[in-house]
Image (cartoon, rainbow, N blue to C red; front, side, top):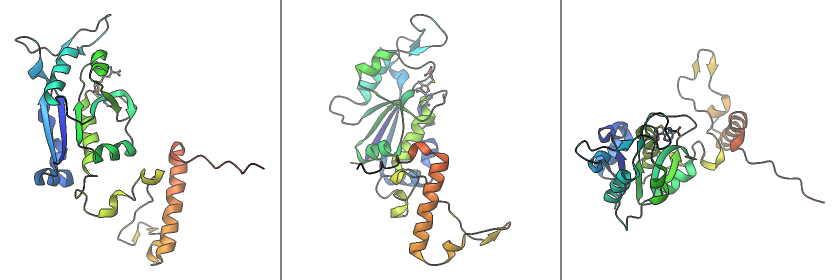
Length: 234
Ligand code: SAH
């Protein structure tokens, strides 16, 4: 069975969107992954299929109802569906490559996309949702965040990326940001390609790339760098 994503959203027409193109799109057409975007409103209340209501305690905006979301989740992923249930949320644990690898190596995901002020807190605990953030900023809805999450997973599925290795040498794999890349022309606006990359000395190239990766990571993302080893105790 292929890796399967089910998205719960008020805007199913946003999917697959950009994931219908390029590598993810080719893989989708080949059946390497499957996508189902489901309309939350199908489980809305009454003639107007209402999905939200005013916040208890007052305040601006609208909150998505727990009963509606639970009905949508239960219909999309009945008992026995082993896929993790995620809620895109700025309050979630920020998504990192390690979690992406775990998700990509599992059976797929069920993803709930919030809108308005967010979702009734009770559905999070009631349905065991894992809150996932794509960064410390606020989007207008979970759909763009879900597309980012899906893209990061799908490109890791077997046979999706062209070059076998290109998944293992990248930023965050091995805890470092990636080394810089160059290609032709050799000289461009007085900025030549570093000599070592043209030397043909593969060991020297590997050393240089590793050094650059460490330098760039230390400069830009010291939080990713492993802590310096403690000096040996006497
Ligand atoms: N009132 C909320 C923000 C709601 S934004 C708060 O202050 O925390 C509406 C929806 O967009 C959210 O329910 C969530 O599904 C999505 N969203 C917004 N920012 C996000 C982020 N950084 N990561 C993941 N999802 C996000």
